[in-house]
Image (cartoon, rainbow, N blue to C red; front, side, top):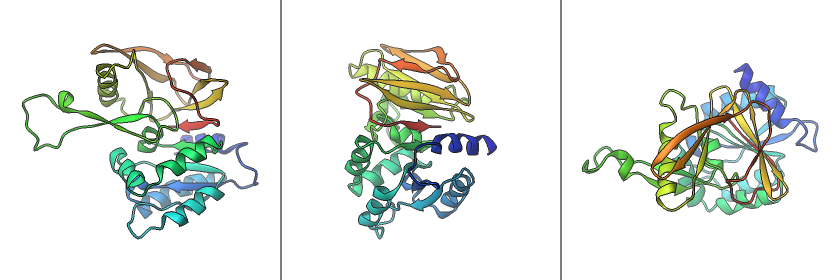
Length: 248
């Protein structure tokens, strides 16, 4: 928890025009669970921020109220939960253009766990348990679009299964014609900082080195990790956002 607070403090440093930066908390992936927001919110406040909820998950939540919070904030924080559920909320409420406009205008964004995956390009949907089992789950998996704020593919906290879902994402991207797609693993004690550098991205690992994977055809290989604290230009991405985004 101390490491989370330290990473949050570093992420908030220097991004706000106010002494206490206002952080818009987006809890769509957890259904705006109040307990989860309270836990994460307390860490953000200990790191020096002031948390305001941008609630979208409930049908009774007003998109206009969430928009006002997001327009006024210094930093957008996309919290954890279920990636697909969170993306469905943002799509169903028509909120994706709002987040993408904020990113184009230079609003810094932070993601944690599922939220970091949501900030990326795409993620994987696996069939329900009662689906026909004629093919393996990997073969029946499909991709769905995420926010695309950071033009990368990432997974979070999946060391124990050797980043199995990220490997499926990369295989699916390769199958639809993307050349040598790359993905990064965000460990339990680390993340990556993504910043624009001209027409490219600069990616820096913090906390721990970031595992890196590349797909060549159906084969996914773990390559040398992104080293801790050593910025790297990423040439395998689409055009970058105007401001930085941190994921962990």
